[in-house]
Image (cartoon, rainbow, N blue to C red; front, side):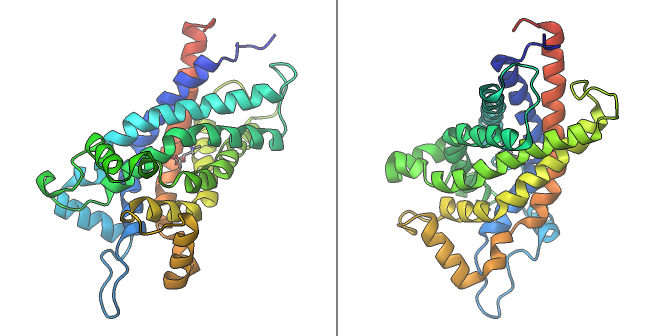
Amino acid sequence: MPKTKPSAAKDFISGGVGGVCTVVAGHPLDTIKVRLQTMPVPKPGEAPLFKGTFDCAMKTVRKEGFFGLYKGMAAPITGVAPIFAICFLGFGIGKRLQQKHPDEELSYPQLFKAGMLAGVFTTVIMAPGERIKCLLQIQQEASVADRKYKGPVDCAKKIYREGGIRSVYRGTFATLLRDVPATGMYFTSYEWLQRVLTPAGGDRSDMSIGRTIVAGGVAGIFNWAVAIPPDVLKSRLQTAPHGAFPNGIRDVAKVILREEGIMSLYKGFTPIMLRAFPANAACFLGYEVTLKFLNYAVPSL
Ligand SMILES: CC(=O)O[C@H](CC(=O)[O-])C[N+](C)(C)C
């Protein structure tokens, strides 16, 4: 008999709590990342809008106040909780599909496959959620009245009016390209570190706060090491004016490589990596604590 009953409902709820923790811990650096990735290319002799992560943070706080860094958070908070809920649910399903019995320890390639399935599951809401989030994050007008999009619902309505459901789902393939391998990496590295850091004779399923923070933070870094280049392409595609890239991600890749070079595929590297550790340590901690609580309070769920 397994020590606790694995369940889709527990994975879903705990994943949702993990998602909320991720956003609260990581949104300011996510805003900086999107602004660096999408700032206009400076003309010859012109200074770039932001010189780097710190400059972008300082200019944003000076111009828009501290909460400028939290711009666009309503969309991820409402979007990310279900995304992470579905992600952890998908990972649980992916694991159970490969297990012969609930106690069977999966190999790393099997964990990777379960993670990739989770990446496919999340894209249905991740793609439109990211499109809305990126469009809101790049607005730099200080007053709401001057902004094109007043909030996530207004943004969703306007992009739908502009180009229908295709516009809302612009960047779906790019999102799959980013999240399928990255999510495989995410869960495999988390599980690997949990196993490696469990002391000899200890039990991996006994939660340890320190181990979870390290494994979760490093899993976030591994996730983004794979995800950054497709993420740059995705952000550009999702924030471009209607009709700018008729062939989608292929056109974006061609233009970026021709005009800005291969290194531009790593734009936003510093804020991404600075955010990755705390945001994902918070995520897995939120997930594990909630799961432990549910196993204690409603073991039969
Ligand atoms: C792109 C993204 O949401 O990555 C998640 C980690 C993070 O830093 O937000 C991981 N995952 C795609 C598995 C949800």
